[in-house]
Amino acid sequence: MAPYDGDLTELFTDAFFAPAHRADGPSPASPYLGLRHLQSRLGDQRPLLADHARLRAVLELSAMTDPRLFFAMFLHHCMAIGVALDFGAPHEDVARLASGQWIGAALMNETGHGNSSSAIRTQAVFDPAAREFVLHTPTPEAAKRPANVGLDGFARLAVVSARLRAGGADRGTALFLVPLRDENGPCEGVTIEPLAPTPLLPMDYAKVRFDRVRMPYRSWLRDGASIAGDGSFHDPLGPDARTRRSVGMSRFAWGAVTVGLAAAARAGVALALTHARHRRTHDRLAGDIEAIAHLNQQRLLFGAAADALAATAVARRTTALGWHIPPGGGVGTGPSAAEMRTLALNKVTVAVLADSAVTRCRSACGALGFFPEHGLIDYQALTTAFLSAGGDNRLIMLDAAWAMATCPDCVPPDDETAPGSWPRLFRTRERLLHAELTSALHTGSQGGTVHFETWNAQTELAQRLAEAHTARTTAEALHGTWCAPEVSETARPLLRDLYRLHCLEQTAPHAGWYLAHGLVTPGEVLALPERINGICRRLVPHAEALTELLEIPDELLRSERRCRTRHRPTGMG
Image: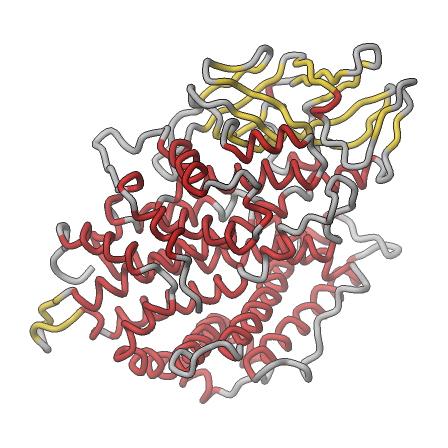
């Protein structure tokens, strides 16, 4: 795996980003000061989305350095600038965002509905006489929340979703580029109410209401739609398709979130592995030995490494599709429904794997995993947040399972073309669960229509199908990583072992199901723990080489190591 460019690594190891763990908590302004500092040092006024590889590297390094910085960066560069480019915002607005003059935000969710993207109540009513839109929050439940825009001193420009009404008709959910505040406070008609602080991923969260805010026509991210001088409305998509297109802005988040979470997981594993290699323990039987010599540490840390690298394999397949903007921008339908479903499931997959990896690292490190100066608790805050943020994982899984069971084109791939025995096993599980769910829905339907009661009774099965699907696609992605021709011959055996370890750990929780379906034998089930242990024992001599596979720049790891040696805990965690 290629290292990061030296100039980027240097940006994140200079004194500006040195940890400052104050007794009263982290500075609320530091993520935004960091964003502007990076923008000034990068010295390129073009949007970072113009270079996917560079943007990915910047976001990954941000997540490793400070998850709050990553949070501000991905919202600014992906959810604000990316959406502005994709929906055809005026060049001068994009330029102000790209320069850091305005810091971007995204206001989609509303207080009263967890799935408010499909039931937006914020209104943008077109005034034909003034050729302006009037943005209004009709009820307290329609307030935008949560949005990290509560801090004074920074000009904020937000992509806001609202129900567009023109010519007396509902035109679907549209997007607008709206100034929320300048350096001196909220703009006229905008109420920003700070929310109570949270200890996990602390940002300047707030809820936002609009009181008949006047917006010029140019604020509308029209995306090929228009309103003529006589008031006639034209949109090539129609209201329902327009809403789907607007909600599709989530793809920019999914590309960013996956690479950030995977990077945080890799950084956590690198820290924990380095700690375990240097930490001495006094064992009652072996005496003074390294922590990594204990099998329970190996199971935790090598399993975490497999999770982190699996998350990375999936994440790096996500950005190309998630961040793709057609030439010209502002006139399109966005990715297909199937592509959006893949992107959403990739977000779920990476969030679960990254959270598992960091949880294992914190468990292995004992007290090291608890205090913020060591970083692991901050990585855990980031991974925990995105189990729900960016789309709730459970809802995404259920939506995907519904499509798999009801869409004629969503047929599981056959077993014969699987790349290796593990993907073949996972494909069989997915195919059998798909058949079970479709049969249950067909049996409970009335005249071909599936009612809520029937679907509701099968949601646990539906979730298992979606999980089986992501297990299969993740194994295929990880298989492709270690088989890639550019992988060095020294790294390939390590990646192969981590791939096998990942597959074994995905199989073990469902061993009874595989046994009941005749896909494994009782002997194979009983052998699973020792097969996992055998791989862990084989990896111990290569722990340092494995750390190098995680792509954490030496400069970052050394600076973290210096911080940690001053707080080395005693005893096994």
